[in-house]
Figure 1 (cartoon, rainbow, N blue to C red):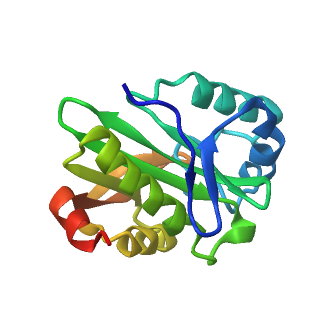
Figure 2: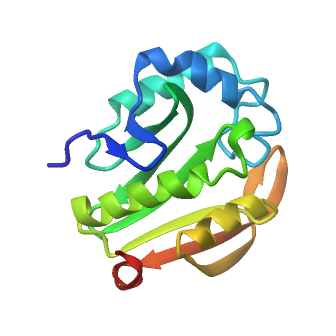
Length: 182
């Protein structure tokens, strides 16, 4: 059984989300620029209720299949990262998001790398993959910094904001992770 846990990096605390995080989450998620490529974004502006529902799901989801970490910098939640785990296939889908005010600071790769390292060990994964809107070049860079390789371009694969867009998939195999691990 996988327990909820905290991870630390050089600058960050990664911990389970808590109800007290709602104001921080609403602050960064209500930024339209931030949510531009977020498929699960609500149809209208991101509200406090949206934040409360997100936090409730993050708290209630089982860490056996969906560990979710708040990214904390200087006592403030500035984003989140987590995985959807397919236990049978031993594959994890990585997701990450960081407040726009912290874009370009290396926060997303730092946080995601810690979660990937933990997940390969905690779940015995054989692969971690991530996907993004093909127009989201910043996210492609994060995946590449994590050592992931581009595996696919799925044409018009996702619906976002009423339009069909392309999606890219990146993956990291266990053996590739071991080669780059210190």
